[in-house]
Image 1 (cartoon, rainbow, N blue to C red):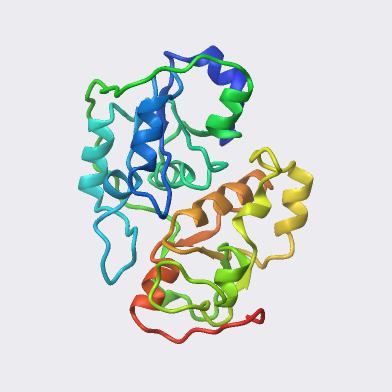
Image 2 (cartoon, helix red, strand yellow):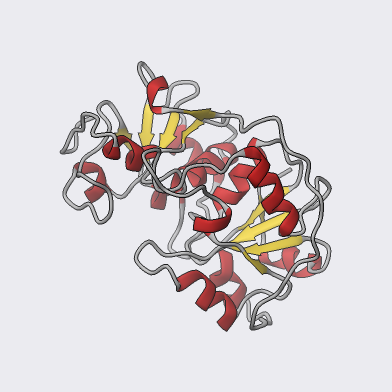
Length: 267
């Protein structure tokens, strides 16, 4: 299944898909729910990145994965079964919503897609929205065997790490949230925003191939807290490449553990 869905196809599929709004902002914990309740795509259920797609923050980072039993229970509470055709979106080009797409793909869920262009593309198309909260009908989701494609900080030696944070954070010039500035030694920088055009839609496949074909087989993608990295994993899938591994703890874990860091442009 193509991991992307376009606005026109989603509009034709409303009522037949399980639709989730995953808006979120690093500096405003109320951004997601407030913007969702003000206006969202009809039928969409709000998903909170911090509460639904992550365990509580700690030494293993700001957005560690929930345990498998908790993830299965969350999916059930959201009305997702193994047969659900899931579509996710946000207002950030998919850089947040891709976390749920990846978490579903990682446990082998067969049908999961991200809305290309997100909520902005829906609005630009002049389509209707609805307001207020929406509660899904609960379902049952079996506990999966595990998350595939996950690596920990102990497994990064001799692996190519692709850090998808913005250039100033990679260089250590700006660090708004993690304990110290810089990047993991040896990590190269390919900012997640380079996956998108000015309309916050994915660039075409040829450009994605050009962006990632120089990487060695099976790199590890990393970011601030294991969220934006999932977007680059999706971009590599669109480029026709194998899924990379994801360092879910990412720089938030690495820096919290006070492991060595590098500043500047060089890996």
